[in-house]
Structure formats: C-alpha cells, structure tokens
Length: 223
Image (cartoon, rainbow, N blue to C red; front, side, top):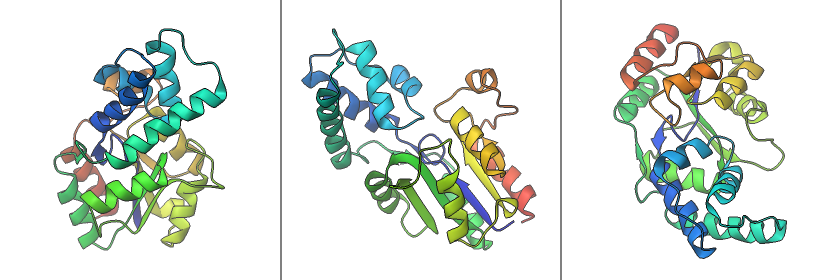
C-alpha cells in the first residue's frame, strides 16, 4: 500500500459548527428559522449548495423557488463561510497523531472533498499544514463525489493505483465513491453519520473511533 486518501468533513475535521453558522447566517438574512446542529448534520454530504437548498426548503417560511435568488443566497453563505471556516473547526481527537504515524512510514496522504476548493485549502493549510501530498475540493472539470474522478486523479498525482491505496470517509456518498473507484474503503461513524444511518444505507461495519481506524490502517498497510 502506498497511499491513504480521506474525505474532509466528518472524517478529518469536525466542521459542523462553522457550516451551521454559515447556513444560518444566510437563512437569517431571508427571515428564515435557524437550523439546529443535528439538522445541519443531516443536510451535509453532497456539497454545500445542496445543504443550503435543504435548509431553505425546511426553514424558510415560503422557500426560495427563483434560481437567481437562491444563487445570491448561496453566494452570501459561501462568502461568510470563506471568512469563518476555522472559527470552530478542529481535527478529531487522535487524527493528527494518526496522520503523523502514516507520514512517518512513507504513506502518501490525500484529501478529496465536495466542499469548495478555496475553503478546503484554507482549512487544511490553517489546521494541518504540511501534512498532505494532495488536497482538493470542488474542482472545475471534475464532478462531485460519489463520482470517483477526482479521487482517481489524486491517486495518479501521488503515483498510486486504487489497488495500492485506501479511502476513508464518513458517509454513504463516500462508500459509493470508493466502490466506484475500486479502492478499499473504510467508513467511520464518529463523524456526520451515525452507525445506524450508515447501516441503513448499506454500509457494513462502520468504524466507531479514530483509535480503531488507526489500528485497521496499520494492519492493512503492514506498518
């Protein structure tokens, strides 16, 4: 094995409170009702545009059907998030140590996220600088996950094939991404999806904590 690639939100970082603040900031401008942390958790996973769309449909008194108006709302949310993406965000306990262990053993590390690339780069460079060999969020020319194109491009950039790598995520979207890429995939339940939710969506044997994930990676990578 040569490489381990990760999803960002709910896998490496707990970003939920900053996402919540950004979505609620935008909704408040349009006189909508604030979404709870638990509600925001259920919205995320397929990009922030879709997350905002779900929040608007549930929390805005009349909804927003006009696409141009919704695009303005999305821009408002993203501008706020860009400047507040690390107010509350932090790596899950044990993640920095696990990544350090992998890196010390010569394993290439990558992140592939559906989040806007500018924000992904900001979070990673601020909180875990000089850790990853490939980092990418939403990128022109590459569809969002569960399409595996960006993950496969990342593997190519670090000179690894899917057979030589592991992908780690926290959602049914990540499970499908890994399946389509033909890569060994681990799904964690300490992030944005519970064990029950993951199993209902066909994920078998979710990993409950970072310590267990680290041990499984050690065994698979023979380190």
